[in-house]
Length: 225
Image (cartoon, rainbow, N blue to C red; front, side):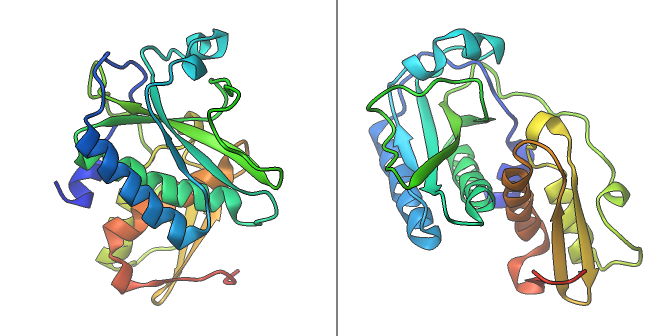
């Protein structure tokens, strides 16, 4: 399964089977997480066989069941791009998990922090977590906006449209898809919407846009107005 196939196949899953993640797959995920941490300066952590974070009221409210494995997205509080980095790197890990035959779900609030499990230093912040494991189902596709709703202007090249289509397959908070892409030649600006986890969403959709468009086709523009 290549990355674009993983993008299309992956759906959010909230109910998990009581099936442990094999050691070989866990090792592959840890190695990939190490790569993501080295690239970004984050301290993402893989937590296995720990059911307490998803055993309380909040997990029930979020309709989660059987979650014993998760990925904790941790980084330095002073990093102005912390949330976007967590979204971008976290989604890379989500898609790698999909390639390994595992299911995932981004989780903002409906879990509890178990003392001594996730390592968060004084100068760090736990942004959110990602539920992980073998789903009781493969999830299902959700309603999506059209490309014209998330791009500005017309007459765009195919690579730009493919990037926007891939971005529309990305998970966002409450499926709001509050993001926009603007293009000037081969420069692309991605704009975050407003609301909780908007910057995390931005990192996620940028990850998808790169996969759909091809990273060699364009450059991100951080200043275009």
